[in-house]
Image 1 (tube, rainbow, N blue to C red):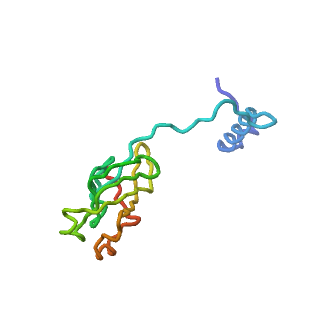
Image 2 (spheres, one colour; image 1 turned 90 degrees about the vertical axis):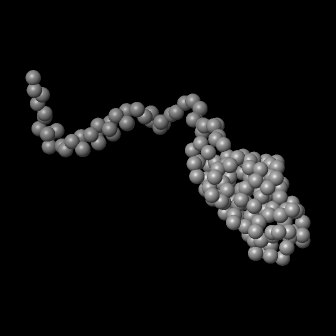
Image 3 (cartoon, one colour; image 1 turned 180 degrees about the vertical axis):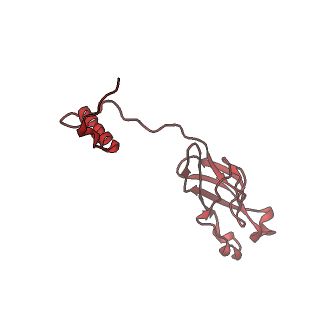
Length: 158
């Protein structure tokens, strides 16, 4: 059996008919006071993945005991007081080619702060570092050429 389309509807395009049908259906779902939603709103997932920092080659590390932050800044004997939040803080020893051979036996005591935490789907990593010598007056004069503030860190290669 074939259905006959009334002449008034035959002239209406398919897109116009679909739009009219959607408007009628959507209007039928709403109340005069507007749409009412009940229940708690969805909250973001509490799952937080591991936090990393990358060395100069992009090697991802978690709470490293030693790391090269740049071609001139090498840290060793790191002891982390904080890790995983907006900042990570550790104390350790600073050396680099700029201070050798003097600092080979006696690296400089420093505090390092990682910041710029960047979160992605299931991981996070720090993007900047600041190195604060305990006794800046003990650093050799050439240290003024070494960037110790806001060091841009390499993105980890996973």
